[in-house]
Length: 122
Length: 108
Image (cartoon, rainbow over all chains, first blue to last red; front, side, top):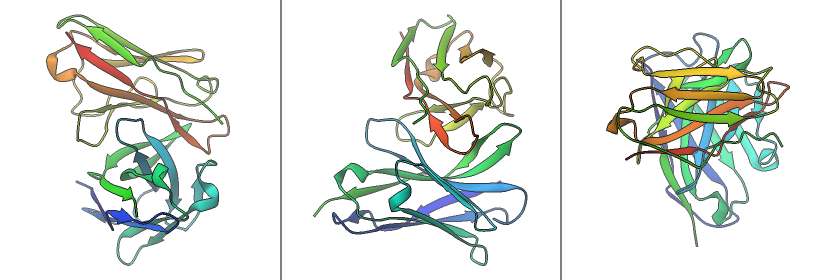
């Protein structure tokens, strides 16, 4: 059973960079044809896909966040990470990491972390 | 940017059938997926590739597709089905992923 766990600071100051790590257990991050995604959810609002990475390092980002987002992977640690720069209060949200499956037409998320709340405030 | 449109809320009585729709221009080309999210919890996949049900998901959950609209149907709704439901798909290129705005299912 694959498990994902987000970690990182719960409080980030405006204009700084938000950094989170997702640790994958119960299987190798490199096994199978899986991608690995970050998704966020502001309090009381809907889900927003941030971006995904393949273990080769290939990435795709949400166009609305692309200029501020970097997702990277460390296969030796079975982890992947998110960096979001120049944050504002609008970036306050619960951040989820998720295993992403490539179907014949499209991608979906079959395993999710429990989520971690990141608050942007001075 | 690509959008998926869901009704904000749906209400049904226990034992009735709930139908939640999701509309998007690329849905004829891209599969849709449905997630159930209960308060304080991560989303759970309940339907994949328009109509398939993951193992462990009750048979009362089903999905269908017609043109630019996909539908999640919950038959014989139970109190435990009260949750937010999100559709998810991709734009026509298949590259960028999108969620619908979510539908709050209330069991009266």
